Image (tube, rainbow, N blue to C red; front, side, top):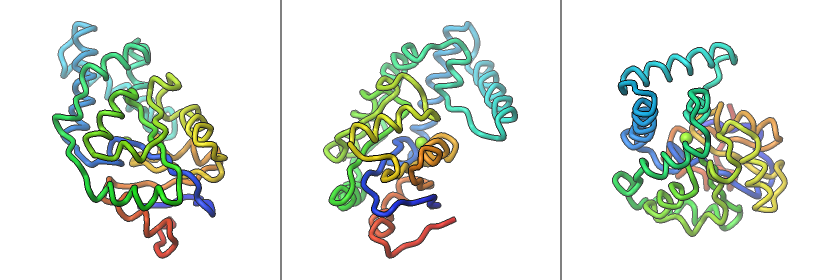
Length: 221
Ligand SMILES: [Mg+2]
């Protein structure tokens, strides 16, 4: 876990979903593979050919942007798939119930955090998928605000979802902390907006946040 520019006090925590509120590599891979398979069907290409093409695009994009990562959503747009179509595909293809189970440690963690902070989820999946995932984890009640791909109609990394979350929670950006597993996608732009950031390796790091937020734990880079 690495922390960046944490404010005092912290009034809101903006959580990424995938790889942050749960750790499940097989499920994550199923999202990506499912979307690429569908893109291949639309373009008349095999899964392997389409995957290689998307990865080549992402490698080129990274080289041209100082090594930063390009999200799948933004990669699909480069292949001519609109955000609206991407939302439909994701709603159809992604099935959290097949992979994600109740997480009592996460429930306990969020219960403690929610005592002092407002909580939001910001995800590049549609709100429907986010709601299903939170329900599977048993933590839906902790998140009054869910920002999905179909809220601002842009994929992270983009400032709009983070600004929208802060507005909906009625918390200034300088009192927000964005938490996620990918620096370029979840932290880079929030930090530019004046938010704090916490880079996690998975939900196991999220379990440590109450100790961090209550000041007896340091994770400065
Ligand atoms: Mg993530």
